[in-house]
Length: 106
Image (cartoon, rainbow, N blue to C red; front, side, top):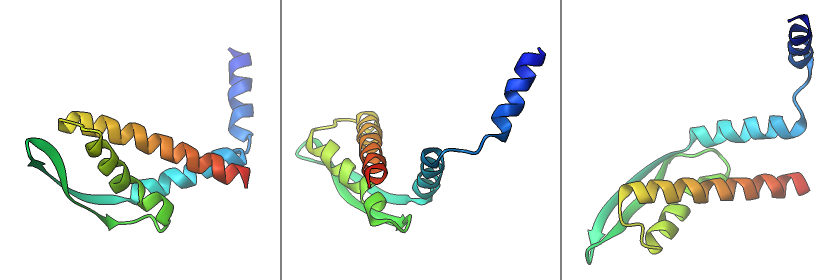
């Protein structure tokens, strides 16, 4: 038990790495983003009628993600809202990962 307490105390005193801090900052910015999206049907398929930011993060690279990936998912024929949500989440995560990799490389 004392061993685990010792490890917990050591972990609590460690400073977060630069990478961890960058992830936290990016997550905060992403949480700020709010999107107004309107879906409809066109020729029997889901269509993106409108997609716009109602609140941005202050970083155009991040702000572009929601509407860009939604358009890509619909173009690849996401047929239901659930499929669209899953596709948008997966593609958004890939874009965010790519942004983190690029920032770490610079």
